[in-house]
Image (cartoon, rainbow, N blue to C red):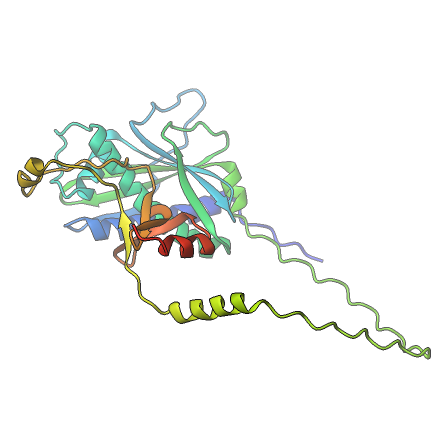
Length: 304
């Protein structure tokens, strides 16, 4: 019997690097108002133990769960993170602008949108559901981690070099899983001359109460009713004076931070929460928490 050797870790790291390149290309192609090129790069060299690199000003650690287990991190220099934040909010790239909290939040939001695409790509690569969640902003120091680089270029700004760091646990989790061994064939039973006992008669299953059947029938009639679903990023109470003073370019701060989940409302009632993603060029929501079907029905039956 021969055993197939799994691909080495560097191949898995290159595979993950390729997924990030493609997903960054898709998201930047949707939000940028000018051509942007994203490609894999070999400029990033692994850091030695004697000379560790300085802590980058922009970092997001991402934890994988469900089919995959482990962590990875995406790092960007301050100038590059500032440029990507400006691209997301449709500001002209300007290196003289301060990389303040708002622009750091914009950079994080861009990476979150990329994560939605990465999770979808990893689902087919891993053969199962994959969930990716941001879990920190400190540059990691994982031993035996794999490092690779992603280069972003455009005529509008200087080249940006992102660094992708993958933990050994995630690299191991990306290894193809061996197919389960087939169970040994059972021996055919010899016919017995002893008379076989007749199979026991199945007892009739008692029917459900008529009230439950009627409720189920009524629900079936309502399943094709169309309802308006709304995604709520946040809300804010404003004075009439403030509303009348609004004009193009005015920024209105909401009561929800960038890293907090958004809400899905049906009939004015919150039925789920999730993360904002981009699906085929449109904004969408990836559900992370949701009411049970019974709770959803009861919620829709209440008038706000």
